[in-house]
Image 1 (tube, rainbow, N blue to C red):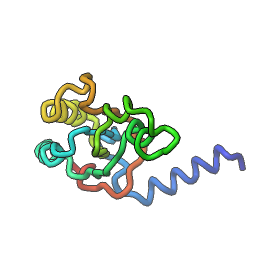
Image 2 (cartoon, rainbow, N blue to C red):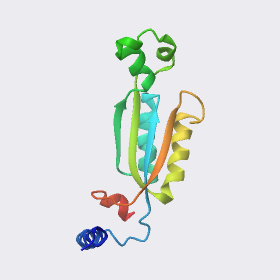
Image 3 (cartoon, rainbow, N blue to C red):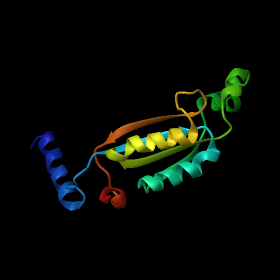
Image 4 (cartoon, rainbow, N blue to C red):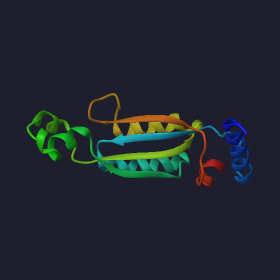
Length: 140
C-alpha cells in the first residue's frame, strides 16, 4: 500500500465520521487581524456578531519593535523602534465562510481605519481546508 493510498483512506475515514463534510458552501477562510488600538476590539467583535461570524479568538500581542527595543537588552538603545511600537495590540483570528470575509474586512476597516495607514494594523486571510468544532458557523 502506498503513502498516497493511506492518505486517501484516512481522508475517507475522516469524512465519513464528520457530518459537516457535504455543506453547500464549504469554502472557509482563516481571517487574522492585528489591531493596534486595543480599545476597538469590542466594536470589532460586535461587528462580527452582526455579520454572523460567531467564533473568534482574541489574543494580546506585541509587535517586533516593542519586543526588540524594550525586552531584549542588547537592542534597548533602539529608541526609534520603541517610539513606533504600541504598548498593546490585539490579534483576532476566526474561521469564516468565504462569503462573509469581504464584509468582515470592510467592517474592520470601518471600525479601525484604513489598514494601509501606518499604525492601524494588519490583516490577512488564508484558505482553510478542514474545520472541526465550528458547527454553528458552518451551518449558516
